[in-house]
Amino acid sequence: MTSKYYMPTRVISGSDCISNSSELFKTLGKTALIVTGAHSAKDNGSEKDVRMALESVGISYLLFDKVKSNPSVACVKEGAEVARQNGVDFIIAIGGGSPMDAGKAIALLATQDIDEAELFSGNYKASALSVACVPTTAGTGSEVTQYSILTNDKAQTKTSIASECLFPAVAFLDPKYMGNLPVGTTVNTTVDAFSHAVEGMLSVRASFVSNTLAAESISQIMECIPELLKAVAAGTHAIDPRCRKTLLQASMLGGMVIAQTGTTAVHAMGYSLTYFKDIDHGRANGLLLAEYLRLVEREQPELSGRILKVMKLSSVNQFRKLMDGLLGVKEAISAEEIRQYSALAIKTKNIANCTFKLKEEDLIRIFEASFAG
Ligand code: NAP
Ligand code: FE
Image 1 (tube, protein in one colour):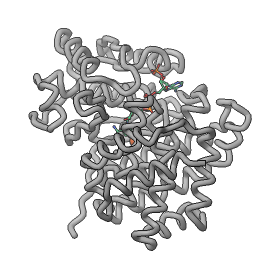
Image 2 (cartoon, rainbow, N blue to C red):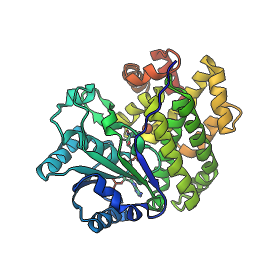
Image 3 (cartoon, protein in one colour):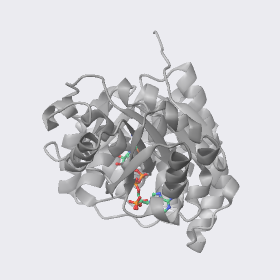
Image 4 (cartoon, rainbow, N blue to C red):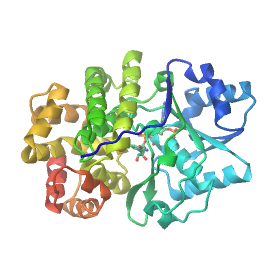
């Protein structure tokens, strides 16, 4: 099989990397739209650092700070309108996956009118404004992917727009912005990154390069799990800064993985938990990951064995215990909900990425086992 690797994003990391690299913004354009959520980018200093860097190199900017979690098409259309009306020629997206994904979709929609159906079917020109990303959660890896994941109300799920033109031009990774990230969000986003690396190894598109990146991401996250469990038990966001740095790196590696492999059944099923039950994206994946791995163990024991070995665990049960410890008390789910979500997930393109053929009954069993006990 032919395998390919492509990831055109320039990655700049380290403390104060934005102010130390402000000249870079001049390569992206003359007028920026800074895209953020309502609060965190102001509170953690990232928005101020970007504004100061832009001012130091004479670039004008506007702020669009209306992105909510799980961004909608209406939100990104509004952002694109602001970009067009003000002659914006590049985007700087700051925040978790939601503002970064919204920033990419705004970059696309600022260059062309695309109606909702065509946006999700991929029927548009591969042309978008340049995007710089500043991740302030360590989970999605969106800063190095060609995906923008938006809420798709018509299909009652979340759908990814994927185009090489959406790879950010630059990603700035500075862990100092995560100092006050609440422990719940820290755990959920870590679990998302973990899921990207594991699902990448479980994808038909896995390659030597993606598996190498995934194994490193999994190892780095495993190193941080004891610190996370301690923070969960103490209910504190005070997490060792070295661990914050490691998680940010591991999350980026996870993004580099899914940029090549896509995600699998876990993300497909998790989208319903987010859409219908408002469960955070990363947590939704984490709730399902161990039971998916158990199914893989039945179908392809060599593959699940390889992943457990990277985690330095000896069984799926041990992995399940670890995830249960991180995620705590689970939400309730009804048999009717399980049937509905499984019927939706089986139709998604992520299912075709799995290394064996999944049936709707398999998804039902994964949901049932994941929420039991
Ligand atoms: P998020 O929805 O971006 O943010 C969650 C919450 O964390 C928000 O309330 C946000 O506040 C807050 N927050 C962000 N950074 C913070 C910080 N440093 N300190 C304190 N609070 C902070 O969550 P996410 O898990 O990072 O992203 C999830 C989204 O990414 C989903 O839509 C998912 O589908 C998508 N995703 C994308 C990819 C991809 O490749 N593109 C991959 C996986 C997932 P504010 O709203 O005030 O900023
Ligand atoms: Fe994800």
